[in-house]
Amino acid sequence: MRVVLQRVKEAQVSVGSEIKGHIKLGLLIFVGIALEDSAEDIDWLCNKICNLRIFNDPQGQMNLSLKDIDGEALVVSQFTLHAQTNKGNRPSYIKAAKPDLALPLYKLFIKQFENNFGKKINKGVFGAQMMVSLVNDGPVTLIIDSKNRL
Image 1 (cartoon, rainbow, N blue to C red):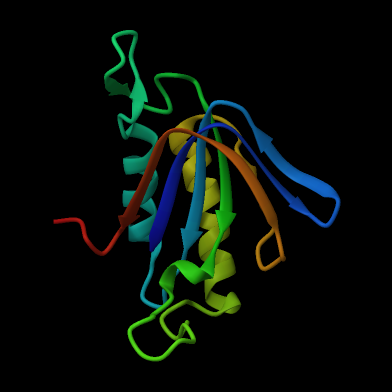
Image 2 (image 1 turned 180 degrees about the horizontal axis):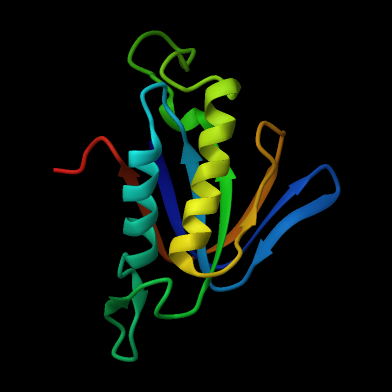
């Protein structure tokens, strides 16, 4: 499972003209689910994300987590995070999980994240064509892959 985290001042996801999720200070989390992903990947990632110290303390040092700042989270599914671009000019998505596998894992990710975080989060619509807007803070953007834990 691969995530792209963006520390944001605000972010929003829409489908058509309808806003599906909106947050102020917090994390915009793009989630890509691969064929070999499991609940173990979700547990590890949710714990890591909730406790990752990437928000500034009063001295301007990144010492605070999403929990510490009582921030918000917006989770958006994004299968393109598993694109392979090494051959030709058309990305291959062969390693990305198909919806029948990815959707249950995406729902589990949301549930586990809310449990770890201790409150409800905002989310996009799985499989929909979404418009995402954000004000990146820093900018701080991190990529975390659950298969690269060591």
